[in-house]
Amino acid sequence: MKSNSITKKLGKLRAAPENFIGTELLEQVSINGVDEPRRGFIRNSFLSAVGLSAAAGLALKSASAQSLGDPVIIEKQVWQTTLGQPVAALPYGVPSKYEVNLQRRESPGLTRVSAASVAFTPLQGLFGIITPSGLHFERHHQGWYDIDPEKHRLMINGLVAQQKIYTMSDLMRLPAVSRIHFIECGANTGLEWGNVAVPTVQYTHGMLSCSEFTGVPLSVLLDDCGVDLKKGKFVLAEGGDGSGMTRTVPIESAMSDALVVWGMNGEMLRPENGYPLRLLVPGVQGVSSVKWLRRIEVGDMPYASKDEAVHYMDLMPNGLHRQYTSIQECKSVITTPSGGQQLLDKGFYNISGMAWSGRGKIKRVDISVDGGKNWREARLESPVLSKAVTRFNFEWDWDGSPAILQSRAIDETDYVQPTNRLLREVRGTRSIYHNNAIQSWKINPNGEVSNVQVG
Image 1: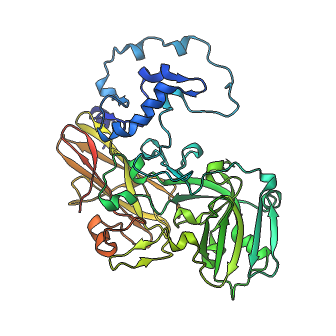
Image 2 (image 1 turned 90 degrees about the vertical axis):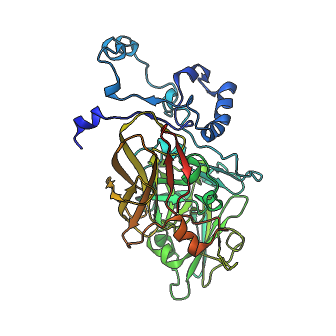
Image 3 (image 1 turned 135 degrees about the horizontal axis):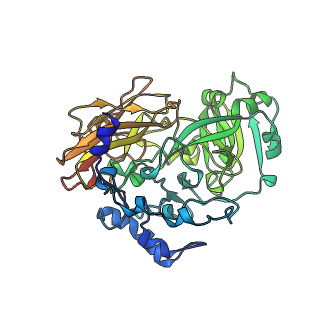
């Protein structure tokens, strides 16, 4: 479709209720943060999303809908005729005041246990493949700490020739690498197992983020300690938080692409993401990328730690639990249009979303607008990286009829993202983790977009 014809046919999209802040709410935003009326708005945003509130959000006006005599474009605006602000008063930059509503959010439907919590990334408001550090999803098992890097240590022991303790200064003197990878919690999309139609993509898929990570390959440290690759078959990664999070990682992963990380998106890790040191095991469930990493032990068998014997297992139809199934299989989701948004009129829309696979690169993404009856190939945007998020786009003209939007990803191993029906035939309906089924968004004739489960 040519760009000039696209401009003539542009439709208007109302954003998800929690995505943007309207100008009528700006006076409630204080210079130091958010005041009480604004907090009330934020607290109610989840409920607004359930009701698909038309009052919240920002209508995106198309060029074809604007009059050529629009004073906003014809007349000089205040920012065109006055002196702008000097260097930002705050030494660390912050987003525009018009974007303050784009933020991580907790789900009212999830039980908070002590300091354990989940904060979901607003996927509906992101572009490209990199998640800003301040929007990277959070998952804590006993809260987060801002640890003094001068007092943090990493021990490597077990089946090694020489046990060693590294300071942060020791680690950061080593040759570093930077790689882009996704981290996805094993429970991402878990509510969909129980046919719970949470309203927006932030809550269905928001325990997913993709960043550039900087650190030293774990293999370098294991080689430095003289790892015994004949006897050593697994490593145990231990976190320094109060929950003592520990995970078993196969030695193959430890010696291939696992990283001991201190940097994220060009700066040091944020405290909530493991500062000053975390493990990154690309392609596997996020819990294995242990935060506040304090110890690596090399052993000859899986460790069956408390977090592996009770949690992050798959309850199978025969009643048995499947353990150590950590690979995040090929998956995708449309982020716009998606639940909570609204198409305000007929016309052209760009369907956009994200695809990823724990087994390598995304090979193709197909789009259906009729609930899986027909499929057409989407355009993959570069870069397409291994075990990283890939952005896809698809041009679509909406004629005002009911529609069901779906995306289906295929990775370089030719694994095809399954439908709900196919996944449940193998996994049953009582699981929590590793749901990579195709996500469906229903569009009503009035343009409202909602979460619906199909096949």
